[in-house]
Length: 327
Image (cartoon, rainbow, N blue to C red; front, side):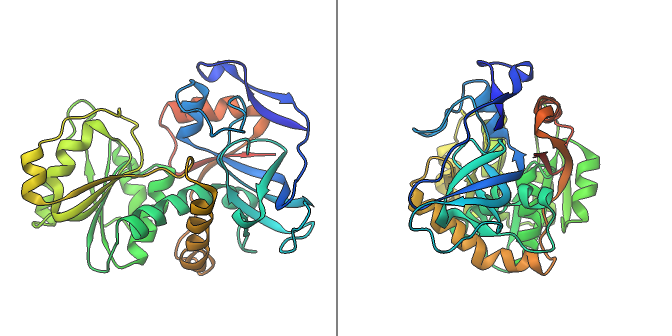
């Protein structure tokens, strides 16, 4: 089979398309003929050697989600058959013509979704649901602050928060992305500067009491403003550190607000926890997808053989929604 392959560690120039041995499904596993696999920020970090995959997965073959057809089932698998349309999050090696997935990690692809849409859905939707509902405890009527409003996860998080009855405020460095996010349900957009991001004061003009829930992908540069924007006893859920991982906390402000800062990531979790998050997505989010209330946003579909172009585009922060690699 062919797979996206990193020739060492570095920039997009090391991204290639090479021959590898086709894997086989073992007991409890399913071999999927991959039709689409979205690119994620974690893939860029892995390419640089900054985010190694869990043990047992190749560091030079990226990919955290996929959609495709069942090609082969391993011993003991009774819930899936050859030809079934499936999608899943993965710990790695999803950007290839074939990938092996545990049978309980698979979700059936709704008929209305294209391969590109299915390939763009799982990581963003499972992450969003887990952060907003499972960890964040989102309730109808809350104000939710979602950073990086044009990112793949954020475009789903905005829709999911809106479907849950929240008022959604988003930030971006690009006015165009804020405007496009309004079509997804964003109620208020805040344009932030690159060197000195400020958003708490503007948020409190809309929500004087602050936001009970903040979903942060940026990390260190936004930490102080997040604490100024969160409501008393609110929660800041950190799911990314695009701006850096090390920040300074005003503990007196944290104590006064009685807020919580919670970090989360899906990839290194034990299998059973990832299965639980997948089933929660299937139970609570997939019906919204089928009904058309939540949809994956595909910025562009690019052949896997040209994965380097997708890496370059994501590095430039040009995309709105997900970049999907198709096989």
